[in-house]
Amino acid sequence: MSILIKQATADDASFLAQMILQSSRAGKKDGLFDVLFAMDDDAVVLQKIEQLTQTNAKSHCHYKNFLIAQMDGQFVGTLCSYEPRIATKETFIEALKEIGCGEEINKPLEVVYSCSFDTNKSRLMFDFMEELEGFIDVGILKALMQKSLLTARLKGYRIVRTIIEIGSLESEHFYKKLGFEIVEQKECDSYREIFGRAGVMLLAMEF
Image (tube, rainbow, N blue to C red; front, side, top):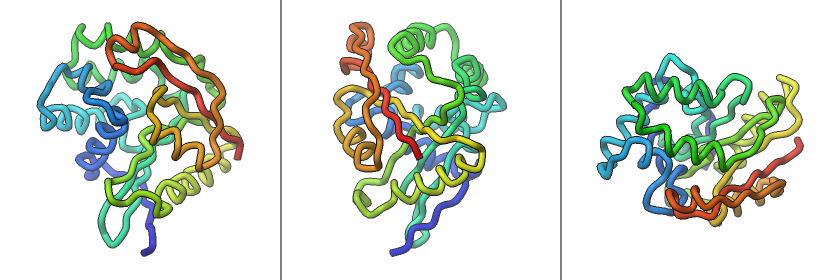
C-alpha cells in the first residue's frame, strides 16, 4: 500500500485534533489539553483543539505546521514541524486565549515551561508524530519525517529536535528508530504531580 503525504488544511482540523490529543496523552489518562481545558469530555476537548488549529495566532498547533499521511484514501498519521522563533510560548498562550481560555491555563503552562529546555531558535522542532492504531510499523512516520526534512533542508536547517515525556516508551522507541538520540533529560516534581510523568527528554537528530 502506498503512502501519500499532504499538507494539512483547515478542513482537516478534526483529524489533527484527534492526533494532537492522542499524542499529548502518550499512553496516560490526561495530557496537556485535558488539563488546560479542565474537561473529562473528549468531545469537548477535541472541539477546543480543533479551534486551536485554526486560530489567527499561529502556534505550533496551527494546521499549517502539519503534514498528514494517507493510505487508501484514509488519514492515518500526522507530523507537526515548526520553527521556535515563530511558534513561541507567547504565541501559544495568545492562541489559547483566542479560543476562550482564561487564567486557568497559567498553572499548567507554568509547570510545562519550567520543566522544559532552552530550545535553540535555529533548530527545527517536531511534535505530534502520531499514527492511527492498527497502522503501526508500515513506514508512515518515516514517510512523514522524510517529507518534512526535505522542506526543512531547503530552509537551511540541519538539526531537528523533539521533546517527549520520560516514560513515554512508545514515542521514545519510534523516535530512536528514526535516528533520534537523547540529548538531555529533566525531572520535575511539579510535572509529575500534574501529569504523572517524571519529566521530559530532549531528543535530536542531524540530517
